[in-house]
Amino acid sequence: MNKTVPSRLGEIAKVFLKLGIIGFGGPAAHVSMMEDEVVKRRNWLTSEHFLDLVGATNLIPGPNSTEMAIHVGYIYAGWLGLIVAGICFILPAVLITAGFAWVYVLYGSVPQVMPLLYGIKPAVLAIIFNALWRLGKKAVKTRKLLIIALGVAALVLLLKFNETIALLIGGFLGMLWLLIPDKYNIPEDKANLLVGSMTIGAMLKATASVTTVSATNISLWQLGWFFLKVGSVLFGGGYVLIAFLQGELVDQLHWLTQQQLLDAIAIGQFTPGPLLSTSTFIGYIIAGVPGAIVATVGIFLPSFFFVAALNPLIPHLRASKWTSAFLDAVNVSAIALMAVVTLQLGFATLIISKPPFVDFLAVAIALISAGVAIRYNINAAWLVLGAAIIGWIAITFGLH
Image (cartoon, rainbow, N blue to C red; front, side, top):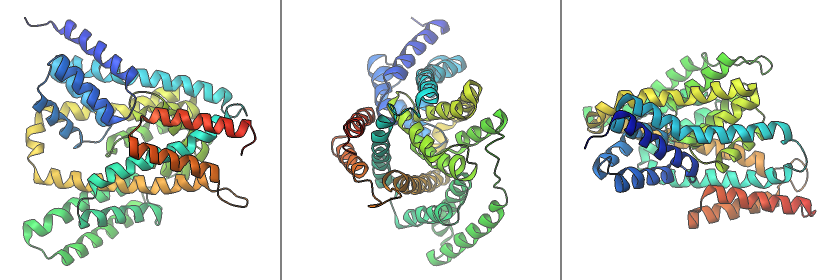
């Protein structure tokens, strides 16, 4: 018996609200939960179709698990299902994060809260390193891809390049480099020279387009445009968002301090649902409730359009050699951005301004957290909670 559209929409809302509330552990955990709900329990999709969707989400920017929810909603209940599934999966994380943001703005600088944040920051660094290690092993598959990653890292770290531009340069020029020698039998050394010269040209052209805005005059339009832009080019998952936030909001625009960024990341780790809900927290810090709404809509909106456009084209995209090469290049470029921001956050978290110049307790928390994350694949929320307790004990009882 066929179900009515309202009935299907109700089922979608129930499933994805549930997943949005219990969805700790990052995109891989979210996708596993979705597979259990929509394939094993409800038979909305076959396993093969579900895996096709997982592969397709890697071909477009945006958070993979959120886009999986949108795909499933579209397939099960059409356009309304697309909207309901996406909103229901995102909404719990956004509301919880907004609540944390409200508390943070009121009490974040109060001494009783600082011990918790002290312990959380090195744990967040370890979580990012674990994601970098895990994703890097999959992304850096060849020597060419390693060189692309190093080139993108150099653009950002040494030449202070805009992260969005560096990612696009790595993706498009990397795609050409990966394909041109095979397609036209160009010797690899000449292909290296070609890509190098094109990169230099793109660099010279792109540097003129990077502008800064005074931190004292931030409009909702500027805030929304920043997050819309990031949501439109964010390959590599939620952790790559940190690189964009560090590069633009902290280093270029100075809308956030380094400490605020670390605190925002920590809150994102401690809440369920997509990590991109960090944008809600940051929007609230910068411009209150309107800022939180604008930032959230800006970063998630592109995913709805990308999924709607991509879903009918999935069979063709999966068979395209050019798309495959672009995906490889842009993924390894995203890993490079993650490596750069991990290094920057490491200095900010572990280095202090007075002798011995190293915060050994923070180093210990980071190393233990990284070891536990890599060895036991523990949920990030538990790492954050454990580190917060350690930080509170150490400072409260004078151990630091």
